[in-house]
Amino acid sequence: MARISVIMGVYNCATTLVEALDSLYAQTYLDFKIILCEDGSTDDTYEVAQRYAKEHNNIVLLRNEHNMGLNYTLNRCLEHADTEYVARMDGDDISLPTRFEKELNFLDTHPEYAFVSTPMIYFDSDGIYRTSRKGGEPSPLDFLYGKSFCHAPLLIRSSAIKDVGGYTVSPYLLRVEDRHLWYKLYMNNYKGNNLNDPLYMMRDDRNAKRRRTFMNRRNEAYMRLLYCKGFNLPWWHYPESIIVPLLKWLLPNWFYNLLHRARK
Image 1 (cartoon, rainbow, N blue to C red):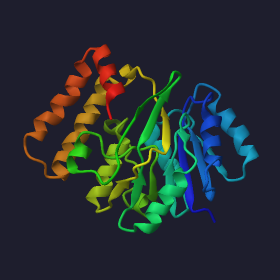
Image 2 (tube, rainbow, N blue to C red):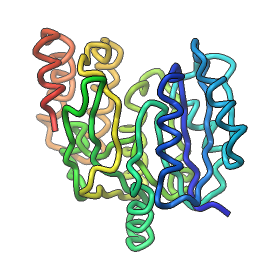
Image 3 (cartoon, rainbow, N blue to C red):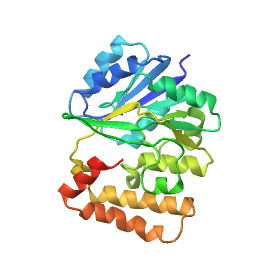
Image 4 (tube, rainbow, N blue to C red):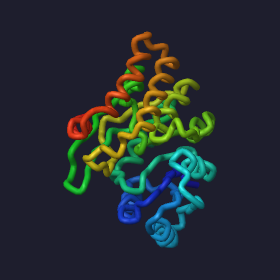
């Protein structure tokens, strides 16, 4: 029986999905199954996934009738995860070959941690432009400023993610579903750590304007306030938690994009 269930919610990634799946089958550790849920795409994502699933007997292919969002879609995948561990993967990214081997070895030898992640290498059509550095266990302020864990390279014990109910489906958690998952895990005494090696490549457009909607910034402020309360942070972080997302929303596009490319 496989030890890892790789959960993938995919949407409009027909041109990149094969490369993403190929990177999983290029892993040095291959004892896994893939649970792939297509989330109402408007391109040929489902057809690409269907062709790939016919060639591999360890893929469970699901499909939403219409677009439901990542929270809901990953929970559907979790319903089919009957393995010791759950890994994340996105349909437009690349897992480097030793990702599963190193993450699994860490959790097998560190039972005090419920999950592990790694830094990410960010790339687009012009190549690599940034690598995050997030080794070690994050501090409370790391959670507040969104520097705790990268979501896509996650490997977590199934018992932990299911104990906290998986991902919470709410309009206030769109695009911050990962930060809310960390919050639930830590509030239930589950801890995580980060490896030092970047083992995941994230396809990320250098133009970050698409993330700068008022709804996304509202949700970021909501999560910051939860962290302030959950980690008993000093009072001055409460107004800051509202002001910082608002300022991000108001920044000129050229300046925000510059910060996004330079951020570690």
